[in-house]
Length: 350
Image (cartoon, rainbow, N blue to C red):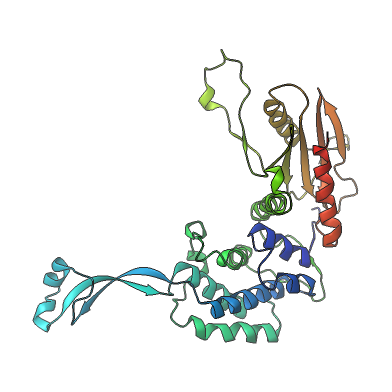
């Protein structure tokens, strides 16, 4: 199995970009600290982030309640009052809304803090700091981390500061917190590849959105460049959804992010080549996007680098379009990693 490692420092930077928290308070301080364990990094993000949130005020929301009360509050539930014979006790069942901190966002935050305290490889000092946060969450229900519906947590102006916090919480739960060896500064496969792949794609997209908004970065879909008569079975064609699409002037660059255990395929004769399916995929994106057939669209496969002896390194022109495959070394210092990303932008030069 090919080993793929990521410097723990870069994990935080990726999280900060992916969850749009690169300008959040404490980002710079955390990025310069040394962490020997992934758990310590995640604990520090929660300590600082949740601490700031407590000072700012925990997220509150109107939660629907129903209770038997001696005074009328909200709407009287006549049917339930009669069924429970509440009136014989001088009470009424009322339905009302309470403005409370016991929201799904805070429930997820509290549950993961407890999970890290109990099962994480976290320094005693950070465990103490995490415990100090719990009294501020007394009014919040402790739920099973596996019951949290991450896809139902929504964000708006009032709770946007929870993006990074709950992004970290989700990764903690999905990763089940595997232990790193003491002194390690690298992160091996700490949770499923599909989860890490999603983070990698999101990081790339948000990096370009933050540093190059003029390139209109986004995950656009590419329409099939069909001839007019070709309409039979159109609805059965697969959707071509890109990971990152950058535009400058008349030029377009489509980047397809790949996070695999092995970035090369090996033929029966021992020859290492770029994955065929990946190459055909990026070529299909480029050819269908280049409707003018003028070579203004290029495509790049951007693999997370592994420790294999041979790495993808392709830069060719196929029927007028520039197609490439290269790697992004997530275990290099952040300055070098960023330079690799900036170099990819040079493909948009005329």
